[in-house]
Length: 135
Image 1: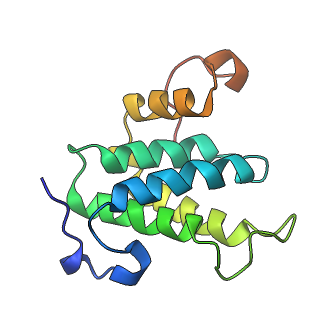
Image 2 (image 1 turned 30 degrees about the vertical axis):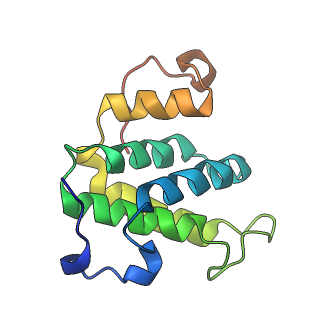
């Protein structure tokens, strides 16, 4: 199913050209996630949201919401520049928390497992028992 975001009210400039959108956001996501991991404690949930967005079973509206939030997160220029240590990711974190709150019911354990694998985490390192936590 081809994701169409035209009717969702999302500015296409935020998401960029439709062709290759998922690959671009995904490639930049992991680069920025590594940099932000120390400042954003829920980075696993952010990466799990990406896996939720690329899951064809996720509704198009939810996918659009996730990609809009992730696109803001990976943009090099935003309201508070990410280079400002201590507060640079606060605006990004606010947007991401809002997105996670909206899409939480669509996140499945397989999305979380993929995120843990992508981040190189084990359940023991996270202090988790392997059960999905609340987003």
